[in-house]
Amino acid sequence: MAIQAAADKRIEILSDIVRSLGTACELEFPGGEVYRFGDQPPAFRVIFKNQRALRTPLTQYALARAYVEEDIDLEGDMLALFDVRERLRETISVPQTLRFAAQLFLQSPTLVNLRSISQHYSYGDDFYLTYIDQRFRFYSHCLFRSDDESLEDASEHKLESMWNALGLQPGMRLLDIGGGWGGVTEYCGSRGVHVTSLTIAPDSASYIRNLIKEKNLPGEVFLQDVLDHEPSIPYDHAVIYGVIEHVPNYRRFCTRAWGFLKPGGRLYLDASATKEKYRMSAFTRRYIWTGTISFMALQDVVEELLFHGFEIIEVRRETHDYELTMWHWAQRLDANREKIVELWGEEQYRAFRLFLWGGCHNFKTNLLQAYHLVAERRADPGPRPGNSRRLVNSLLALR
Image (cartoon, rainbow, N blue to C red; front, side):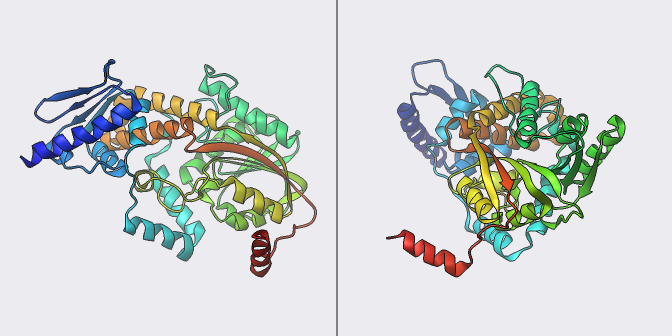
């Protein structure tokens, strides 16, 4: 009776959601009963595989966890399914909130980053290479000139955009913050630019060093956090692709950036963004990114750059580009499901499947945004105000 009551409650709630969305779907229960909603062919099917699945709370995190733990199966159009997700309650536990706050305010950001990156990249290069582009191997968004362009071509456009915005020339020295799998080193190094890569992932450092050796590229790699990097000679320019999300202390980052660039040197930065700086799902913090990762708050980054002696040269919205990038990643992950499950396990596949399709949906619906910006270092360090001055300015702004 209790099981049937739980099933009836889910039917009632999901029926209301589906009617409000106009989405046709099917719901299958452990006994084989199938309930169809909507008049059109079903866009997706949710399969409750056991009695524990029927007791799962109808929240975003609980259902995602049930899928990862194989109590629920999801079939069909994942983007249509994520339309339903947005109507479900999102919960973040008190322990998770306290842990995040402790990492943010009580622990060294470099140590938190090291633990988070080590956990995320512990699966090895081969896992990520199953779904990211194969030409320059970017784990951040690529730039598309059309919706039907290949991911590989879009990855090259990403580098072209950076090259042109920085005005790079042979013989220049470029700092690549978060070297990934050497896309910047390969592209810029082959054009005569010396690239210094910073990474805190040992596999990434080894990959780039091998790339430099095999292709005889001008470059070097440091296994070092950008917040600790102090070059003996300032760089001509710097690029940071999809890494500012791991450095939420913008004030400290901008202080370092002004210090490692020459006057007139430019910084090219791109990132996923949100209007609320620390907004991130409980699922992502549990299964994908631990630590203090935070989507970029564009307004806060621009403020700190201006306060720290930079001029903003360009800001461009690239939300649709990130949507397309994650669509390609999700498609490739699904296409390689058999290999991924064999080498890394079903749970790993399911967690990243939700992460990639969910990210694609977030950009599609503008829950997340993406930008690149270009900033140029002035000769003076900027009018960075102290706390008392900021308080006075804030009070004056209320007038």
